[in-house]
Image 1 (cartoon, rainbow, N blue to C red):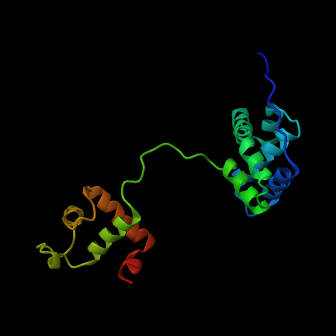
Image 2 (cartoon, rainbow, N blue to C red; image 1 turned 135 degrees about the horizontal axis):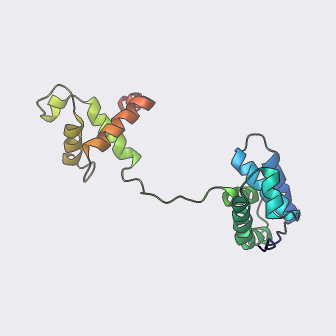
Image 3 (tube, helix red, strand yellow; image 1 turned 60 degrees about the vertical axis):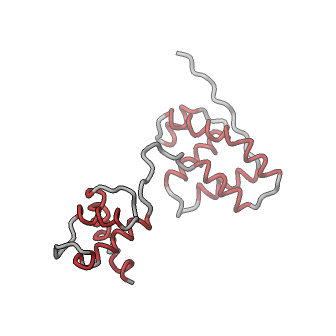
Length: 176
């Protein structure tokens, strides 16, 4: 099976300096440090297989980060031509080395809506003409819809907000 040659990565002095800073900074996330080391190794002429062995990563992962860096090369070159600050360049490099957004359902309810629903849960249900002593998820969902906080919400979603309230003790945030 043929072993294709990986594309070479050429780093400017400023890019190299920023990658060294990221790779050596103790408070950076492990994945960020590892990805910076991948780019440094690739720029040093090490092929993907050797890099994967050195960094104990799968070869596909090394190939992916090399490719992502190559795709962002023009963006980095333009930034350097504009003589952006080192801090801005480092932020750009970190954004290249961070995870891409993952697919999935976008959030349906905003934080404000969740807090408003939790605020309703802190109220006395009888003040809202509910003939019960304690809120149920179904009654909270109905009340949130009646007040126009949300167009539609399931009792199960309300229950998740209430569990979130308990987990993070949001009652102090809601009631002041």
